[in-house]
Image (cartoon, rainbow, N blue to C red; front, side, top):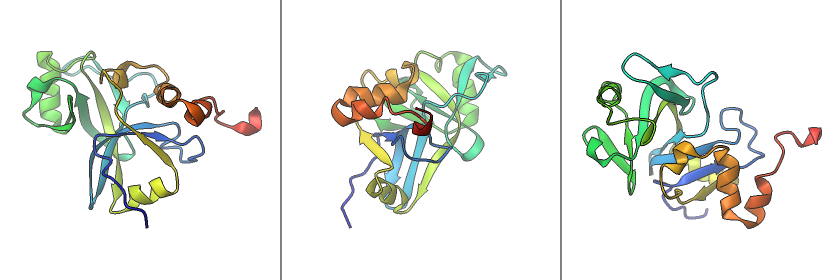
Length: 181
């Protein structure tokens, strides 16, 4: 069995052949990964109609994953929001406290230019992510710089693959359903 690195703080890009509707053409930031499993946030799936949180602010809420789909989470680049956040990678933080998220949005310290809100997350049990990596379901790479690009790049799945060049650049143009090509 291959030895796997920790994917904590990495970007996972779904292979075009993945076949799981929850993760089709997904780009995931891995927020935590250890021997007990992994937690990630899908950063490129919008909620149909661009659902907006209007109770205490006005930020776009994205689909973060199929696990606990009503749980509000945030990824952000504001180092001043340290309380209630943990650093995923240099300059990128994860926040899982809905009350603190709402407070930060209301105060204006969390906004469209430095973060995104998500409902739910992607989760893997012990060894599950490693097995999926062995099956080549995911492509791992470093987070893009500047980090805000994960929040603002249109067609992030294609862009992330094209940046990697070579075969990955070709995969970026792979049709969703090759039978219709």
